[in-house]
Image 1 (cartoon, rainbow, N blue to C red):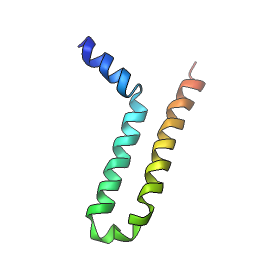
Image 2 (image 1 turned 180 degrees about the horizontal axis):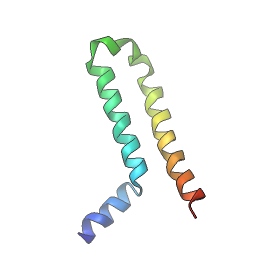
Image 3 (image 1 turned 90 degrees about the vertical axis):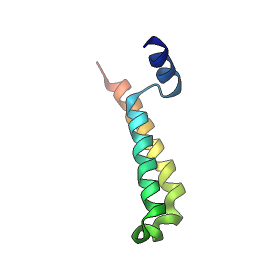
Image 4 (image 1 turned 180 degrees about the vertical axis):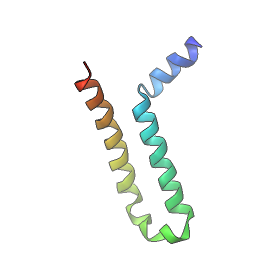
Length: 67
């Protein structure tokens, strides 16, 4: 169990970052595979950058404002 936790902390570091990136990947997968969302393909790179930055800011804010 220690090895798994150490690997998780090394790769991700925080659950907020992991959830944010996973949600971004799910949304990008939907954009690329659902025909109705095809017009949004041009914004998929921008969406990825914004989503990852938002998860990083959320994680940083949580750490900065925790007591």
